[in-house]
Image (cartoon, rainbow, N blue to C red; front, top):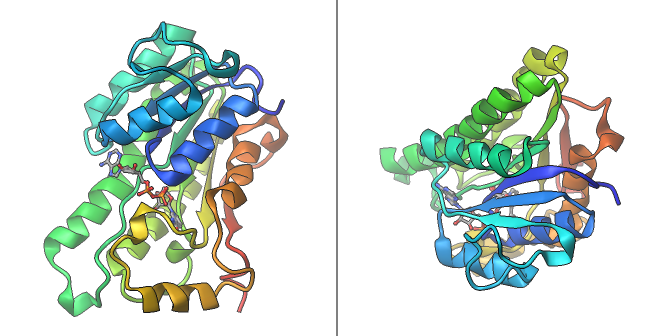
Length: 260
Ligand SMILES: NC(=O)c1ccc[n+]([C@@H]2O[C@H](COP(=O)([O-])OP(=O)(O)OC[C@H]3O[C@@H](n4cnc5c(N)ncnc54)[C@H](O)[C@@H]3O)[C@@H](O)[C@H]2O)c1
């Protein structure tokens, strides 16, 4: 299994992609999972899907497939809360091998003149600062260990000029750049930093996106819209030792969206 022995902390674990990632990490033999999300009910649902029992906050909960799972709700905008989760990983397992900064929010479907400062702040606070907090706290424990892999969820919206979602695209472009700078800064510490740039796979994020907009997005993906299952393999690769010489990459998994 590709993630044998890895202790992994995953944010946004209550979302559609987060749940698929958690399930795949277990299937790939992770030694321990620390799952978090701001939405406690969604996080519970992921824990239940993994068979972690009704109280996923209980470290003694049944181990899905031999992987101990800790679930604790937290907001990635709160650096201290993210830090406590990293500390919990170290307290339970003695280390953190992989940090997956996956929590994210989409901005309202609107052109720039219709957006509010709050729309911008929310996208930047969650999508950029949330990832930054994960990177900072992971580095705190990975640097002394001189090893670790950080994987951030960006988006093709951060690589292409995606209309009607400027704060989202700008925040994801920032995640891609942060990933590259962090990769350069911490390579000598033995830490890899990469990101995945998915195309569109329908999820809770698209709840308020008009149907016509979804159809036009689908038409821009030569392979059609994706599913979380289409995307998780890139995360597994980047988390695994197969990617030991890969750092600073923005791995595009988008059904061909960004080709033209
Ligand atoms: N769905 C897509 O088409 C798509 C495409 C490219 C990138 N992405 C990215 O994939 C990631 C996962 O998105 P998804 O599609 O599974 O959507 P989702 O809405 O199902 O999941 C996102 C999760 O993040 C959590 N979250 C939001 N704000 C948070 C905060 N402040 N603190 C902690 N958790 C918070 C939500 O509660 C939710 O469970 C996001 O970073 C998103 O930007 C999604």
